[in-house]
Image 1 (tube, rainbow, N blue to C red):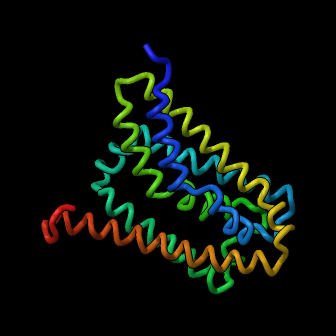
Image 2 (spheres, rainbow, N blue to C red):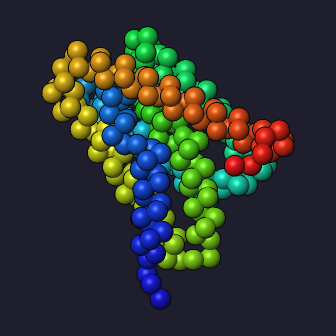
Length: 210
């Protein structure tokens, strides 16, 4: 019997890497922690990674029960997460990212870094589906756990060493990257809202299934 399902592990890792996009968190992390000390940024990286992974794991284990108990559909989760990301993207585009940052570096690590950027609707939905596929299979379960731990490590490392990139780019470069990140984040949020709306319309029978 195979100890670990490598193919399943690879599938989980690639999917979550694309959704969470650790490299893409660098400009946002730099924008939100620009006024912090190195120690505060390190703490924010640890906290954001921990919060993001805690949310993902909770929904992997109890997701179906939680959504079912509260009568919330996955498409509703997508739309609400998309709206929240859209608000964050507008703050980045208008240069108001400092309003989201807390002086002690804790609040910004919880929202928006921990959730919805890391532990967001996309990652939650994906992990819930993978958890269903892994039920009853120990090799797949181990593969899922290893993939989640690997993603967590990458999330932390990309944020933790974002300061090096910040020094290379300089203040003007960070501002430029922040604005670009705002545009990309806005596009991601709109896509999430559109996907959720499409799922709603399909469920109601207003549009045919793809």
